[in-house]
Length: 327
Image (cartoon, helix red, strand yellow):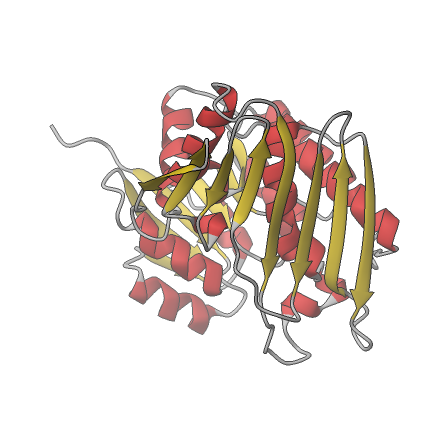
């Protein structure tokens, strides 16, 4: 007997939604039922490419579609809270692209809506479900590295788009911290938890005023992390985790890694873990698992985890003096 497919709606038809939808096609239990953009032609083009049954020229139309089980929200950061809340209030489960919201205040309202409507809600922090990250965390939890003392992770690439890009638009929640700094902050939080205190500095775009490069030090009682995000230069994108008994290097590009190296007693143990598709497949499967179990949140990346992470980024932004017009 054929298993009933989980029907997805895609909200926002940009670059990240394209990648996500391509990976969604690799999951047998999933299908794209509807796509929505504020531009109907864009939605139709996207829908045709990804074999969607329906294409809409507004997000509200998709939220009203009775065939859609869960929506993936891939719009600019500034609209994540409003659209996630609206989708849940229309009875849809939600996977919302990271960052979950602009700040902890918005994130709290989103989580409260999930609880009130009894709808599944998760931040699309796909790296949490990457096999190399899962394996690295298992080594750490098992004590293979001893006590973790230091994490060094960055996310840096040379940004080449124009001034009209949402990535550097302050009014759309742009800037390196929320767009890519979230990844090294996430990795450190996953391993060491909420830092005791944070030191951070940024260099800002002279026209748009968003941060173009930001450095962060997360301080713990007996560990530290040095983290960096930038649109100004390319880096090796290898994440390093040092413990008293060994270290792990998560291979480049570490947030979508396909392997890692465990170093013990100067001996390197290389592990290859190729991903299915780009790697969105694992968070999709987690969503399906949670829906089948009638969960409103994931145990691997919970509401509290998302709230903690955006609160950390709120602290970083406060340190550097980055405020969005909506705040």
